[in-house]
Image (cartoon, rainbow, N blue to C red; front, side, top):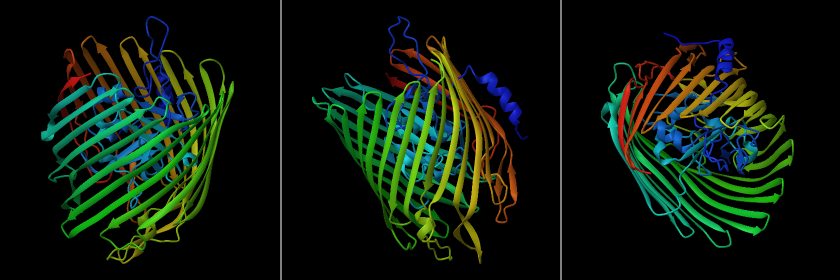
Length: 615
């Protein structure tokens, strides 16, 4: 059965959804009123490199806070991201299987994943391995939709998703422990310790996930997955307000999958590490220096042999923030080195990128202006200049109109430039970067107990890199394709009494301008509704995610339609004693069979029960 709904139906649902809110954008706010009312204006930093409320950021942004992550307790990041405003997800099976996240119809490699400001992705594929990150290690997520190339450089064409780890809580050491399991012989454990002493904050955490898994192809065998991860975060603030800190996160494990009808498996490592120092140079000038490294390692065992793809990204970034009262200026520089070690023969195994950037955040109330500019000089493909301009106008105390234009680029990957294997597939070292220009018009209504946000956007992408069939079963990258992506997004939300409500409605038209086809694996229509209620010591909630059909294409570009689907996820929690609680989640409660990539099945109904101790 195919699930679909029309743009007119989307509009009708949009009107009905106005009193609702994108997933958990509600955070506690300081208030002089005795009832300590909540607000729906979370601070975000990804959109502008500086703390701004969601409405002040002049961007389409969704915040998934700690309360959301705890309530939903997802087994994967893709479960958390699926159906968020402007976000689509495609997976080649469940539990540690290859996953792609599309922001506003752009490809998985045209959006950026960061962990506490550190870029994480494979330099050979150019894509993050979303499936190997445990959601329990993170405190919140910010999803910024729209180009941010002028702030972050390459790959921030569709947007940026940044995951934040806990900083450590004030006071005595606070332990948290969770144990649980469920369907498919799944086991899940996590523990953490957080606290502070003097000016030092600390957070230590570890997690383990293992499952026998489910078949990823029809009539196939179960494909297992295990992941063990650890996190350390330390920081110290001195009397002069200077600060130093260190972060280390490492996940490693094994995943089984299907390769052209034969069993295969892969050992993986995902790692980020960084150290930073921040110093108040003058009263209005703060300077921050960050040194970081990320790793994406994958060793795969096939029936015909073994492949190895290990990539490293090392970065030195210098940010300077100058405060001029109502105005703020950010100036910075960045040096980044990518290196690869592989079982295949690459023409080059290293490249450098040097960048300088500037941003002005200007407040001429009721008008605000954000302007940014960045210059990148890449050893492999030359120079790129990107920029962004956003204008905001406060219509009144509750409504803000915004308009923006921005450019971005996607760097050719090591595979695109240098790949070479024994079958004759070869990269092209003369490729140029993909480039884009994006436009957005939006309006946000912000109230004490609810908000809504409506955005219209268009992105034009040139020099798309596509691997084309060269005959004799070989392929090579070419730059012949163009894409145009148009869309409308409506998000809304409310906190009313004991209810937390959320809605996200998306219509996207991602078109390949050469063929007229919709870009592969993207749904054009998506609806997500979330509702949670506190009932004393109990909590009940659920999510409903509906998406229409999507397409795959064979070697000749012929479409293969994958049917739409609707998923219902249910959850319940019970705090049965001080510091003790239990939680039950049921994913895909109606056991819907669905595909987001051709011939790859996702898991059916799955139930998980967990016991938690701690604050």
